Length: 246
Image (cartoon, rainbow, N blue to C red):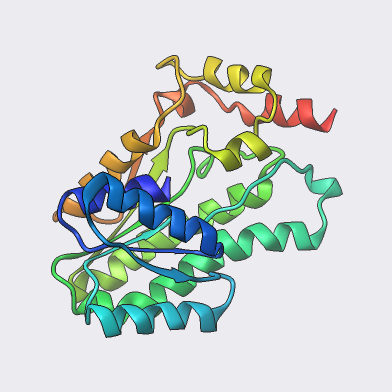
């Protein structure tokens, strides 16, 4: 989804920077953004688990731009694993990326956001954030932490002219989601059947929500749910996770 977010901002005239652990993904992303919008994206290899790597990103942004208007925290990791069988390393791998990574990047970019114009932070969570997350408890706990962090920062940073919100996206059939959450076609259909809208979301649809949150200058501390009604209809992860566990 991150590429769709960056492309949408670039299409609206923003200077954009994209960060990833994978240099090949960055090169492909920059090429796609240029092809779609004509814009040249700033790229940097970053590991959100590493404070020095995150600090280097902030230093690059300061050197290139001097300030930051919008930050989108979208780094994630997830896979099915029953808690009784989950290793501490597996737990830590997800929490370190999702929760700790959001903290590190937000904190490192705070001075730049203070210099920005009507600065906005958008953190990406999930629709199991405020309920149960069976078989993806590591992700659920981390995302719940991100939502609390979002609201805490919204209050702390309001006086600094910074808004902080969260996006709760629908299920987007990304490469990672298909590999880790619904590798079989029947599993993808099971997820689709839990969505009242009757289909999975698209990355471009989620990009529209991020644009809205970034532009809505009187909205802060909120979580925008855009999941086709899925969370209202019930939690699909118990059935899916049990299927994987069995």
